[in-house]
Image 1 (cartoon, rainbow, N blue to C red):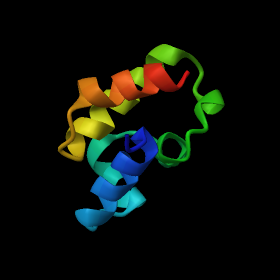
Image 2 (cartoon, one colour):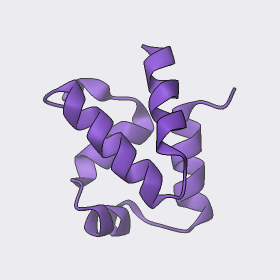
Image 3 (cartoon, rainbow, N blue to C red):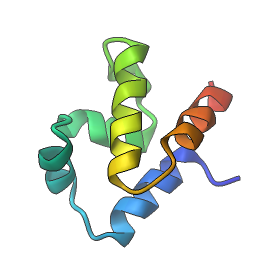
Image 4 (cartoon, rainbow, N blue to C red):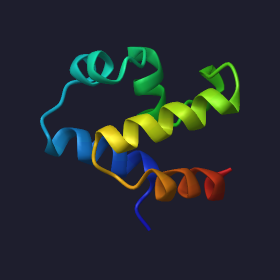
Length: 76
């Protein structure tokens, strides 16, 4: 199974989207986008923010947000 991190990063890179552009388009802070791709979940103030940003970012990248969140839950 491909990890969530790989899916997010691969989708962003395949679409040639920079972190800066993704941050501007989604209104998610650059530090949180990078944390999602690097699995540095401890920087999120609460899990609700993590899951919310994960949903927004994955949908922005054209991924199934439910699958991404399920991958996250399985990795916990």
